[in-house]
Image 1: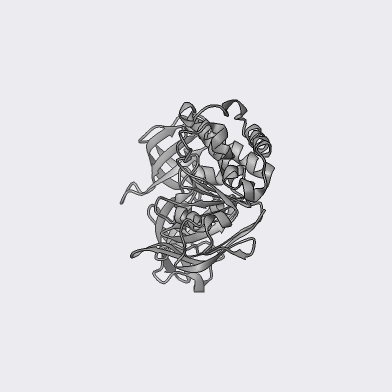
Image 2 (image 1 turned 90 degrees about the vertical axis):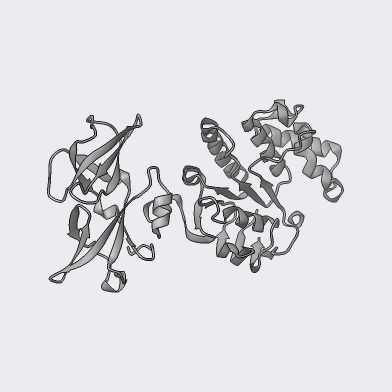
Amino acid sequence: MASVRLESVVKRFGKVVAVNNVSLEIRDKEFFILLGPSGCGKTTTLRLIAGLEYPDSGRIYIDDRDVTFLEPKDRDIAMVFQNYALYPHMTVFQNIAFPLLLRRKKLGLTKDDIKKRVLEVARLLRIEELLHRKPGQLSGGQQQRVALARALIRRPKVWLMDEPLSNLDALLRLVMRAELKRLQKELGITTIYVTHDQAEALSMADRIAVMNKGRVIQVGTPDEVYLKPKHVFVGTFIGAPPMNVVKCKIEDHDGRLILSCPGFEREFPPGITPKKLPRTKEVVLGIRPEFIEVTDKPEPGTIKGKILVVEPLGSETILNININPEGEETIIKAKLPKLTKKYSAGETIYLKIDWSKVAVFDAETGFALT
């Protein structure tokens, strides 16, 4: 297998900078995910690695070999596209065998060798009984497995995937997420996977690169990007429901730094030195919904709120709460793991926040202060 390295890669389309000074290091046998909204540059980054686009500046290495301007066929990679790109006039067997047939002489393969490898990969993906069919006779999930098989049969160093599950229904996506993760670990192929679905990224990746507007905002394990976001964008993009954000001001009360927020005040969190205080003296608190407890009675340190909407989801309940009923509406969501009490809109409640898990961001730059 192989590692992949990008060094200060830039790609422009006219005046649009699609990939802006991206540097990444994907480790050998790693399942690495590029995550971000539409138009953030993740697919362009994948196409640069594949050789389908060439960068305006920067270098790309596969296994320490400079492949920046090599043709795709010379990079020893395989790619699975969002629309699968199967040949409709060929059978499943012919679709899977096609990459080997193109390079049969170079690889020194006989027809029996090709047949053997097709059957091996078909068994691996559990599609042996489909080999005689054509793509039009297959379901979306079956077509996806054929596309994966065609990419795998070449035994590439790097496996590239561009949102391969986005055309499947929700239930099948859940099944295929687990299948893909199992397959990647079983084969040990270095995999770079593009998605806008944060649930896919958190459940499948060894590490995640969160992208926005052509830049990599943060790289880390699923736990790191979820629990310790380095930018407010990462906190609000990842999570369902996403991280609550509350804009607050820093005030000096006789030498004590106080956070003045809509509906409540509290001491400024420790661990942030005066040098780290934002220039504007304004911050954004990031609070995950699951780190908020709800109680019926006021206690020291609780925040008063009024329920606006109750969203029952079976195993959990989401409460939409206005924590500033006397002023400009400030809504946060609380996730209750199990409904122990039936709440209703209009009810007054009190919130306990786990302040050890609250992130503090500079309101101007968006970057974390903690």
